[in-house]
Length: 315
View (cartoon, rainbow, N blue to C red):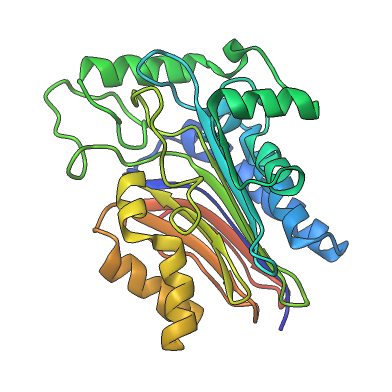
């Protein structure tokens, strides 16, 4: 048994010829966040604290679809969502519809720790954020030129999503998948410490050109995020497909009821439960296993284990 950590920056239709100016900043951020998480684990920070720390940093990077980099709704606004879960207790917190909160993942943790509830959304979540004194910014802080262009492209193509937004979109181009809503840049982190305690966290801005009020898989316990005493899982991809397949919980259920290993369970979910081209996930087990399977073109991902293994990859 030993500690392990994995993090992702989203799965989707990531072209192999991804330009360096789009690839390298994401890789640099993942590398930095991985080291931050490893250092926190070595300093004996709690798994819950580590996943919050790492996801906060990912939220602050405009190259990912969370926090500062959140994509825009059809109204040109941001509606951020996040979820955090402690495997040892199954305590969890989730938020949706945030427009001013700098770090949605930290508000999700406050929902878990400071309220009798699991999930707060929209005006209620914003009011709770003000009550708790968390850092907020004017909604314009989250609206970047890159995401204004993403929304423009999506509207011109009459699409909810523009794959991983790495190239111009032709108006007559067919969307990937059944409805072209492959998620881009959602961020997540899963951790197990040396005692086998687990935690998971996921954060996103959702879909480009999504309807106002749309909620995806990220904040839904058992879909985009789950942790128990066996494993911790964070999923990314087409949110509706992930919700239908209860991706994160299914990994844990296969371990619990079928006795599969973490890798076997995660592979089964990605290959058999989630439709091809829709889903990626990162997961760690209580015994220090780590796995990062996906059935999309690629997934920005990184991991490290106590025995010295490290990995950073896209395809």
